[in-house]
Image 1: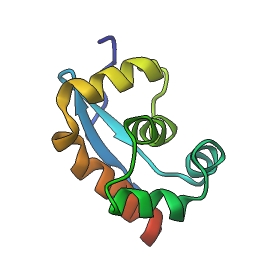
Image 2: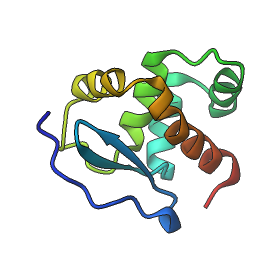
Image 3: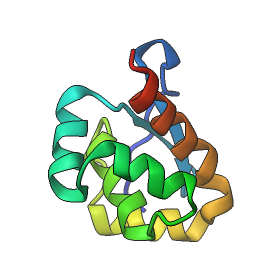
Image 4: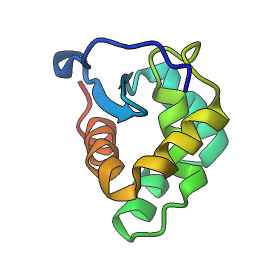
Length: 107
């Protein structure tokens, strides 16, 4: 993967660290990122409910991560999806939980 190394995410800014392919990527659920995600995936509360019910698709998860990715120049959306699949859902679930908590709690 051609992702450039990104410094660890800053939790004070609401960021979560996603480790894929030996790289650490920062995800920040900013207003602009969440508006873009909502336009693609539907209402955020529905997205959270699908995640809680275990009905969030891999495509939805990657789309949410893509929109929240701080440095989208680092890799393509397809590469992000492949990287998420390669590390496995068990490893990305804590990152998803952090992003969803930021959506619900705000920063």
